[in-house]
Image 1 (cartoon, rainbow, N blue to C red):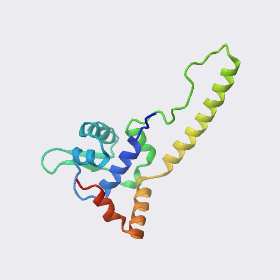
Image 2: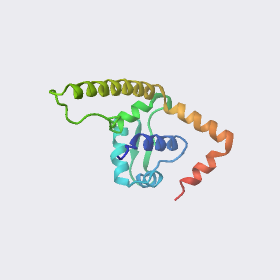
Image 3: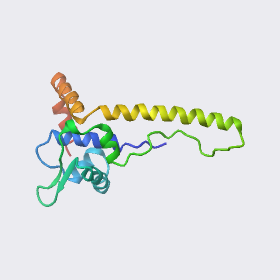
Image 4: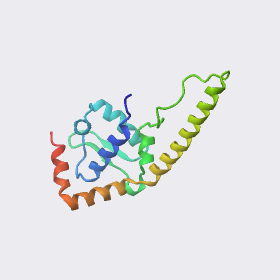
Length: 154
């Protein structure tokens, strides 16, 4: 089963944008996260529509942050990039004539509702500023800033 990595990819990009003085082009972002520029533009469009980033064209143009990191939660980014279904578990064919299937499906549905509510609440509590602070602490403790920059050189 393929995982949906849009949230983690865009959080990665947004944090790099926060520590970079110039706009990132779609091509630079694509190289950073291992995809193509068309996918980047499609995904970034959701972030732009939500007001978290902006784009400028022409030489020197690209994507930049348009909101303070403390004003954007992980849940905001999840929603902006089109994240809908959080879990792939479930049942495919409810059969109202089977009592066993009815109780199994009810148990799975209840567990998924509870897990989703917990995950959404937690994503809503964590801001990009929180992640940036954790990254800054990591850099201070072990020279990660230089390694991170080196990891993304083309």
